[in-house]
Image (cartoon, rainbow, N blue to C red; front, side, top):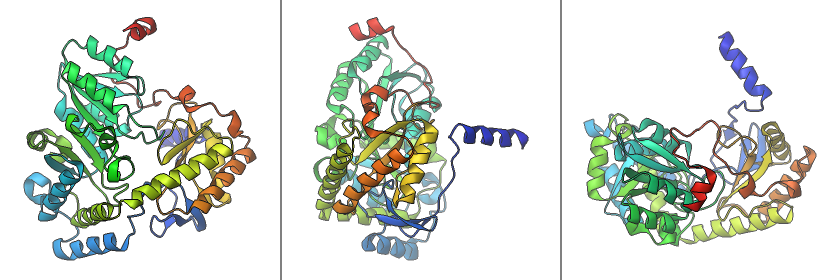
Length: 420
């Protein structure tokens, strides 16, 4: 116990201690945070569907019809008609042959990477991929080549050095902490040339980018060339769980090889019914996506007017890079005092020296309140001694996420890598 006490003290001294905050009410554009009304700018409920009446009603009806829990893993007795119905609808939405549901995005990524890459093979992973992908790489028995963020030249060098052992390129579609989009067209072209599979995590792309919110893969026009599209049901679709859209053959393989599917209880019926209702709303009301994108432009422009460099983001996620972890926390608290909740993100989620406030827009925010939020964030920064105009551009501070590490790193000396 003394050891844990000392570790907790150390985290506090480093500005890395975390605590849970109490949000009262649904995940709407405004919430009550620890008893204080605030504008919510850090939720992943991007389309405002988590508390939509139709989504709530669908979840409640499913609880009455199928019960609250699924009872077992999907391979024992847990797969139910609502699971199959949602899988069919997701496959149709993503334009894939088949779909397989998982309990969460973390379980999907951790299980799929290991199922698609084995001993003596190589996985190629973007250095800013989500922790669930990083942990999937760690769990896989394959070697892992971590390529510089979005750098297709470095990726190609790694593929050439694998000498035919490449199994999988895996990348976020929209990067969750930076708001930028992976160069998917270039990635799939390399995958074709080197005969490796491609897996794209659309957790933050589904419902937010691409035609009718179909994601970054659809936006890049490479749906037929991406082998596995992973996404969550807990962000723009307002529910909980995850999916993998791919070929029927790959679904059959994952059903037999993805340990996180085999050994986890199936997702609860109410969550599946809620996600299905949200998916139907997205299809019926594509303007929700347009409103989200319009709101993102409004806030990005207002933040730029206040001096923040937002050029690295092209989506609804905007990082306000502060640098120091403790300073980021103080800025977040100062913003909360002024009625805006934007969470401070610190190592190990991001690299040392790149602590930030991660600002996330919702379609249900009003434009005027977003403009006011930009002013509040600027005043909060000045109060704690951060000058937005002096913050380094995003490209200058991006680096490997501290603490997530590189399980294996096949890396050339700088001149050789760039010359490749």
